[in-house]
Length: 151
Image (cartoon, rainbow, N blue to C red):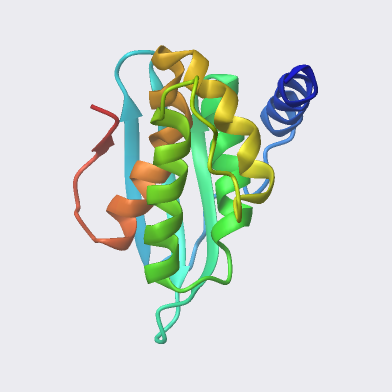
């Protein structure tokens, strides 16, 4: 467990300091804002989806805590190249990972580096930070037109 906790801290710090895909995507055809009122995290998520429903590119901009920024950074890499239906399943699996009770085994298969977020389960107030970008991505892909919130 200590190894996972150490990896969690390492990954969070790395992606917070050097977030991947942290930029505006000029040719995005999906976009949504996200806001976590509990800690003030705000981001805009941009996605370009092709005619076949494949997520070609995902980027984000905004400000927030280390967990929020790291989660967005990892998510943008993770969903790239996937069909929208698979991204919806990924959202469900990630949400289950971070909201399941800490004393139950974490379902991490297929999540790659996102598995480090299983540690968030121990800090319920941080779940909203970890899921903000995912909620914004879902809102963008569904073209909801409203700010995605973690409430």
